[in-house]
Image 1 (cartoon, rainbow over the protein chains, first blue to last red):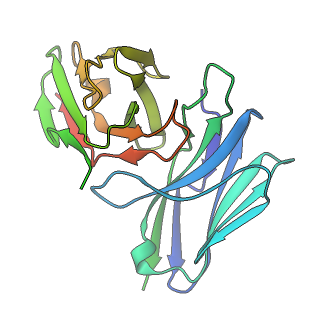
Image 2 (cartoon, rainbow over the protein chains, first blue to last red; image 1 turned 120 degrees about the vertical axis):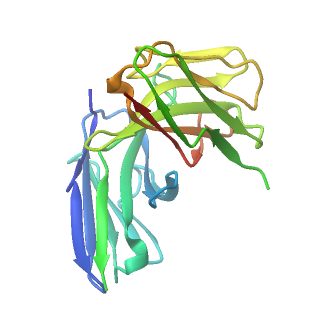
Amino acid sequence: QQQVKQSPQSLIVQKGGISIINCAYENTAFDYFPWYQQFPGKGPALLIAIRPDVSEKKEGRFTISFNKSAKQFSLHIMDSQPGDSATYFCAARPRAGGTSYGKLTFGQGTILTVHP
Amino acid sequence: DAEITQSPRHKITETGRQVTLACHQTWNHNNMFWYRQDLGHGLRLIHYSYGVQDTNKGEVSDGYSVSRSNTEDLPLTLESAASSQTSVYFCASSPGLRNTGELFFGEGSRLTVL
């Protein structure tokens, strides 16, 4: 049962362009939304994360936009570079107090390719 | 430096054989997790542990088992390997109580079941 839906499955962007990856969730009991970046042959690593009490978080060229009412959040990569080519996963964590607390649910992943 | 290591990195086995994937972390993290990664499905949780002697089933636990006898290790066992278990397996750990923080992943174990 997939509670976090991610799109697109793959994305090709030219160097300098904006990459946008979208996620939608169904469970309103999530309290933490991280994005993970995975390079080929490596494990995922935390890129940036947001809590639902803010609408946007920016770290360098990476921005998360969060729409609580629509239950959607997205990752924007500004000035995309070939070194950004990787698989990106969104995720959501249930809030404390429930039986699912602590278990991240991941989206399906997006393979980003940035052409030089 | 503290780290999380998985072994073997690549494994080919036959249907019906028992397989164990090792995961070892030196951060002294309480929480450890096993995920499998398949194209189109993302990362799916197999089993997880919040401490020594604690183990819990994730969303795709059938055919897998884990045990936690110490803080550092969470081996994943496939009791009788099936072709559907061909996948890349990732171990992860996190500090704090019941994963209140960032997940730290190993580099993965690619398993092929023939």
